[in-house]
Length: 229
Ligand code: FPP
Image (tube, rainbow, N blue to C red; front, side):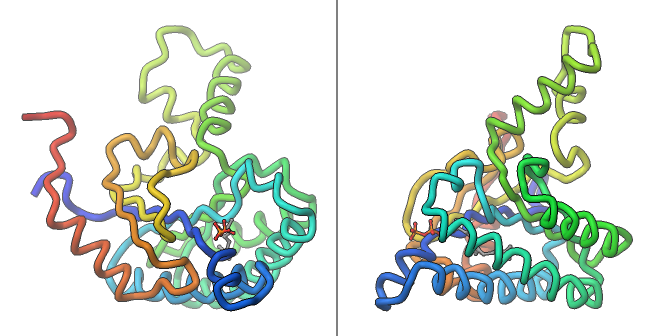
């Protein structure tokens, strides 16, 4: 059916802090457990034939968190990207990043470049990690790029899209958010215009293949009309 194929699933991985609190653990333990959920989800996505998964790992607003938590999260990301890039490479997975990357520390920027470079020819699964990402910032960055280049008016959707962080990535068909919050919090603002939303009460560290399967089954039960009758 038109528009049905699932090319891209985006996930807002929420609830790490509450998961940790419910177990009397420090918040960072929730994020650590969250990394395990990332691994489970990527394996499941590959098995289920989903070509692209994007993960909202750090938003432009997350800098407002306590310094120790921000440092902990950045440490986890560094660990994950350094250690796991080889595994992703063996799995023929391509890793890319979306966000205001110049706002990240130089050592992290190097790790990101290295991971992108090492995996750029892989095509079994595309993983997009959104880091220092904000949908409004992405739109502003695109506008500023166009102004700097002197792009003439009228700007069309196609021209605008070419100035987003990853213009070749298909719009997400399905956006998932865990932990019972019913909003998208600045994730894929432009690209998510026609996405189907799926919410689950589960905290991200408890998310796994059965949950992904449920979200996908729910998606296939819906009819996407893109404004048509
Ligand atoms: C939201 O939970 C989660 C985050 C802000 C960070 C997500 C990061 C990871 C799962 C780790 C690294 C990711 C990769 C791709 C390796 P929260 O802290 O807002 O939870 P709360 O709402 O319960 O407090």
